[in-house]
Length: 273
Image 1 (cartoon, helix red, strand yellow):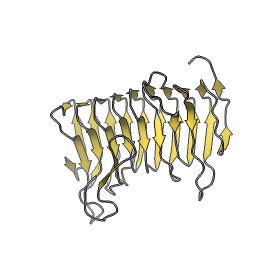
Image 2: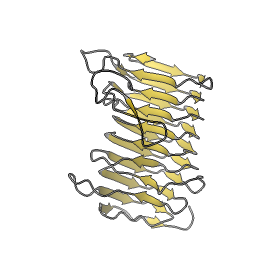
Image 3: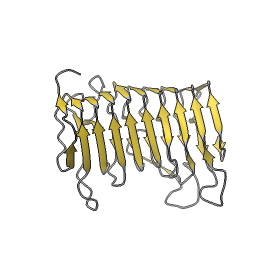
Image 4: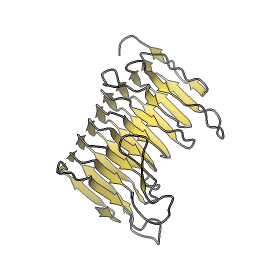
């Protein structure tokens, strides 16, 4: 447990939860929006191997008693649990060169409303239902490798913003799944995504309900009868979704019906990626 600690570093450890342990690392601010506290900022998790747990690294609280509408983890729509936004203060931190494998639910969960500026870099995720679950705050995923995610490499359900850049994804059901939400902004640049070898590929390699999406220079090969990207209908309040694309290479045509779609450079449909 890392509670209200700033300037914390954990490195070069192997953590094994095969004895039935639930979570390898939990970092949070138990003050939960009360009087000013040190909170939990400036964390660095480097060169860790995490395997066998249900959850690898959990940022934010998932059980507390401040309000009935935010105090529990609830059964969910994806494999494992759906965590309500904790309202905790954790941010300006990094997960770098870590390896997660064989976890039961999620490798990394970011649930704090003020979990701002989390960076997950140069890490690998193998055969986890959901590699990274962002319930609140903002996160950047840079140069990571995803293998065999049975639900999705990345799930967003309330994040203010996501940057996904130069990640590599294979054998997984999909790369990104975002529930229908109007406030989220997502930027995907230079990712290599291939769901063709997934046992059960999803309806799309990228399925996002974000209000604003930027897709540049990605390579996307959707498995089965899946599409490169699937957008739900626009939000009744915010209107059509805004999508900017350019330089993407896909095996299937991107059909972004119902969106305000701007191409800043040609996208290509190719036979081989």
